[in-house]
Image (cartoon, rainbow, N blue to C red; front, side, top):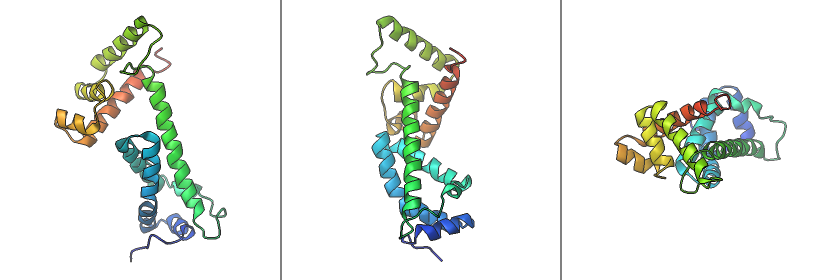
Length: 188
């Protein structure tokens, strides 16, 4: 028996807490468009928003994040507590992504980068490129350069490298993870 999307959140929450996977599917279908619109609006990147949403819903089910929702705080319809919780989770995750991008990308020269002086720009560029060449695997390095230096989309990179869009995302993620570790405060 398939649940209807108009089922009250209070009932869905109860079913989730009982381990009902169909309730999870219903929550996903009921809120995915709203949450995707929120993430795209905040991140200005549909691919990143989609990844973030997918990761959130995996955590929501596997890590049982729904257990943090207190069913006592609801409106008369029993719907706003789940909606508000999901919205706040997506909003916070988007803010975390934006903060990480600003922190990480502030050290990476790109077309809009304005260093304090020309020497600083060359030095940063030198260290990042050296790390990309020495520490990062070649495919990850290439995907990272195409995305962050050449400002190409995931789709364009996938076509150029003859790999899937998901593989592009994975390669860039690998590069970012390695660079973050290399340029961590302990390194500096």
